[in-house]
Amino acid sequence: MNFNFEGLFSFTKNIFLKIGCPEKDAQTATEVLLSADLRGVDSHGVARLSGYVRLWEAGRINATPNVRVVHETPSTAVVDGDAGLGLVVAPIAMQIAIEKAKNAGTGWVSVKNSNHYGIAGHHAMQALKNDMIGLSMTNASPLVSPTFSKERLLGTNPIAVAIPANKEPAFVADMATTTAANGKLEILQRKDEQAPSGWIQDSEGHPTTNPYGVKEGGALLPLGGDREHGSHKGYALGSIVDIFSAVLSGANYGPWVPPFVAFLQPDPNPVGDGIGHFFGAMRVDAFRPADEFKDHMDNWIKRFRSAKTTPGNEKVLIPGDPERELEQERMKKGIPLLKPVEDDLRTLGEKFDVPFKF
Image 1 (spheres, rainbow, N blue to C red):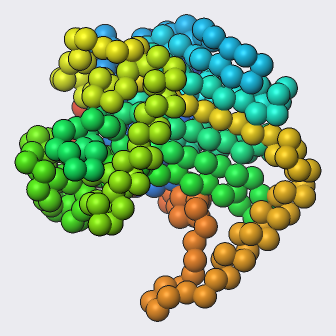
Image 2: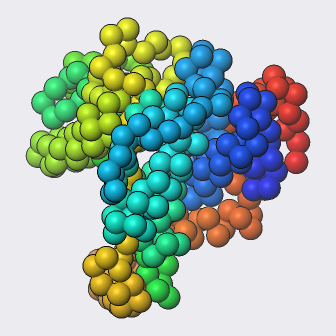
């Protein structure tokens, strides 16, 4: 069943208000969360709303954080998120990176003491309206085994880069450094479907298609799936995200990153504060005139769109195309929710006396 954007937005914002978020923060958190549903990243949208609420109930999310810069230079900063919603902390930190870029040409911000921040692409795209290139990454709960290991030491650790163009839509790459994000497994579980080969290994390190494989002690696999298909490269990318986001900021890294689910307790001997993020903003005109660059981005995009296709394929896509097209469609036709997600939201609404009727 499809639900209109305005109704879902109002419902979600009211839930954030009910847990004590100030009006502005509730608005920001809802914008970030719903952007995932609009862009087709359903695993990071309203399906996660109850997860944030449970973290708040467990005392692991501060609904009224004092997000602040604790160290900085003209072009860099470390931000302490004060255990706030990552959905709120991340946009603030990205804006700090943008303001630094306005003054210094580039801005770089590493964040500690935060929580899950939604989809990486939303934060990177904040830079676009300033004629800047945006970069966004975050570490996450340890569900991923490095190549040749059966231990879970890394998160899905996404990377997003947003690059402005002129007449063409922006180039927006937003990807996990694993073959698939954990949220994709949650969707398969709700649909009662098997996982594709190369997504997961079981607790002994053997390949499996069981969508519950991670819950049963297995692990997600780095991008590539196995060594023969380049998983060492996915492992390296995930490691870079972990180091930039956490070792650099003072957040928890590797196996010490706090779990998203509230029923699992964080490591009693942490190596840092909360979850970490990393953001970058680069003024295009710090390199060449912005209009000149954007005209050449148009040319780049058009040339790749016109590339000859392989049999059975109609066109070559530019990163960001599927999400942008889906966003336009869902704004018109509504956002589809799986029945378990719909039921979860109704239960949440009853709990906080926020009607799920629209």
